[in-house]
Length: 143
Image 1 (cartoon, rainbow, N blue to C red):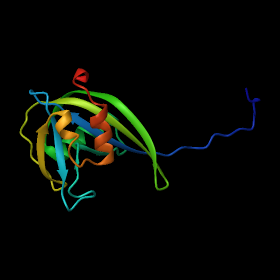
Image 2 (image 1 turned 30 degrees about the horizontal axis):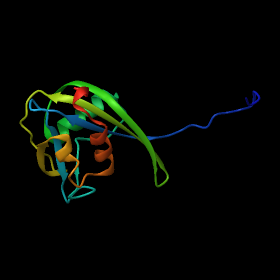
Image 3 (image 1 turned 135 degrees about the vertical axis):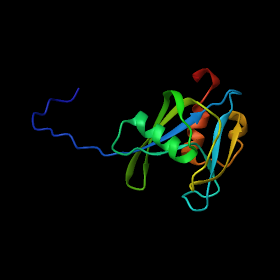
Image 4 (image 1 turned 90 degrees about the vertical axis):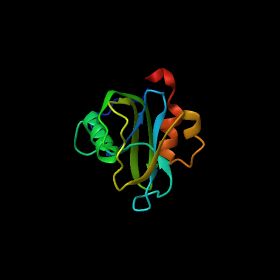
């Protein structure tokens, strides 16, 4: 065990926090979104979500879902977490699972199309790395 250092001052750690949501419909399919060419990772598939702003994490992921697909959700539960270094940024990703209050998806400019798919079908798509991680961690027992 290291000796106690009364002069030790911990460094502040700053992280970018990203959030992704597995939105599960009545058929236990998940909502997968295709990124538009106007947004980053154009053409790849992912999940609703984005960067956490200065806000409560639950409010942040609910905001992202509303902005991207105009859905209200219930039962929002975090179920996975990962961190990585991206360039010089420390990034933390939080994965959530939830149910939509309706299944009427209306995409914003960030996405060009969507599909309701099983987990296995979603994993066959060209997913973003964070989207793939969250889908891989998901199981039907989480909802």
